Image (cartoon, rainbow, N blue to C red; front, side, top):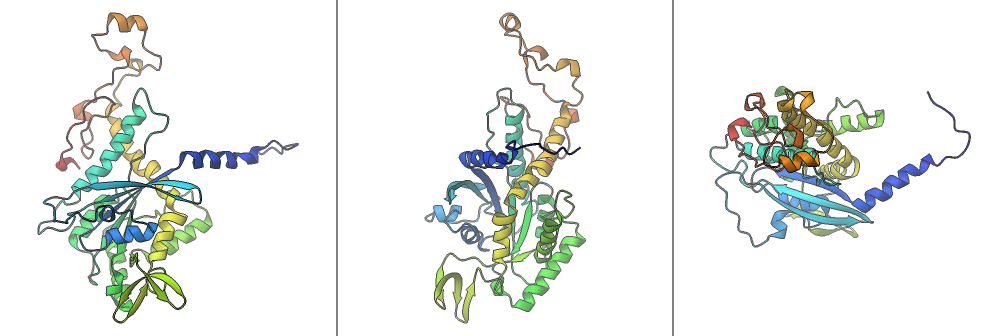
Amino acid sequence: MKTVLEGYVGIDTLTEQIRKKALRQGFEFNVMVVGGAGLGKSTMVNTIFKSKVSRRSCQPDEEYNTPKTVEIKSISHVIEEKGIRLKLTITDTPGFGDHVNNSNCWQPIIRYINDQYEKYLNEEISIRRRKRIPDTRVHCCIYFIAPSGHSLKAVDIEALKKLVQVVNVIPVIAKSDSLTLEERQAFKERIQQDLADNHIRVYPDMDNLDLDEEEINNNVELMNRIPFAVVGSTASHLVGSKNVLARKTRWGIVEVENSSHCEFIHLRDMVIRTHLQDLKEVTAQVHYELYRHERLETLKELPLDSVSSAPASPIGVQTNHKNTDQHNHTPVKPSPKSTPKNIPTAKVLNNQPQQTISESKI
């Protein structure tokens, strides 16, 4: 029932209150880049955020050697624009797809993503929670596809199948200026067909019922462009009377932010200007909730009368401080038999050692 106010109350100030609090706290955004060596992952991240935020840029003297297994390396920055402060974390995956045998090369990535969910869950259910839980969950995974001009490789298909189950995946065709416009369009169409044939649902999710008509139309347009054919560059070149980000070749200049040259601006606008908050919400409400549900399912057989929201009795603590039972808020250990097969068998509760996650259970 909608009731008409008889005078000014001040409800309209809520948005300003929320804005001030959000500005004071700042924002967090975590991006992962996945793809083989030499596909321009570091350059692309630097181009998107117009700063040297990639791990390779911050460690220019580091010599790259293909690791024996896939490694996970993260670096965090605090960037600010017009009073808006953003803590940005970039996670790189050196070694992915760079070996003769690339079977299961996605498992360390899945393990890392789930580990961030586990850390967040531990904070949520701990007895003494922090006022604001640090969010290290991966909000966006940009997946780089080599510009072969053929179709998705088997390792790409298998990796994407696994990744879309735990994180928002945005596929891009790396270094798309190595293809002609006709080759690029044909390659894009083959990739779209591969995604459909293998039931790989990349971001954005077209089944989101919380979107208005304008957002739905925007997502339809984005889905028709995915995978984005992108070019990255942090070098400026003079075109006409202005400097632009571009790649200079012997036959001309490829402008990064020119939509007739590549689709970089569509990727950047989606990741930052139109869908950043939605990426975070889908991570929290879909991917993390699914992980949380599976982990807490291990506790569903716990009798309700063994759980209490009241603080432990001081007398009980003094007399039974050496003993542990359900009345002094000792975390309940889940039964190993009820642990979901697809979830790492790590301890859920705070202050308990976390077991090593087996690759076979990812």
